[in-house]
Image (cartoon, rainbow, N blue to C red; front, side, top):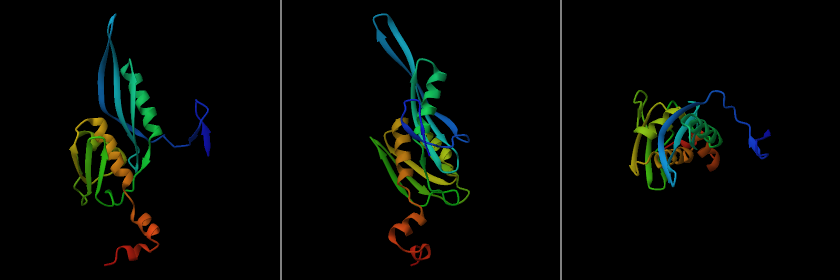
Length: 175
């Protein structure tokens, strides 16, 4: 079912009632004009339902609250679905965005989310309970968040792999 958004374009109908947002970074920026400095804010927000949907958004405004609400609106447009099996991810995966590189690896039950700052926000918002993660390269939160979401997008569930190969799920795990 397609709905029209405020610009008249078709948009996907997404149930956003149970999404929770986390502020990853808030940055004050200054523009120098002949009248002096003009301050504004830039916010990076991660939005997720804790059940496999996660997205990120960037908002810019002169006011902090307006900036965060713009970032949340942007994050709603960038939601991706992540396959989660028994509270962890199905396999190891590398993700890359710009100079930011991340490595995520499934972990045993009870391990928790072993990840730093921006990666932790993305993985917890997605609903991953047990994972080992390492951020390599850039520590810029924007690049780390986008690289983490890239890694999560590349994950494939065992059902999807079996369907693509044209074999049964039991045959996939043999040998």
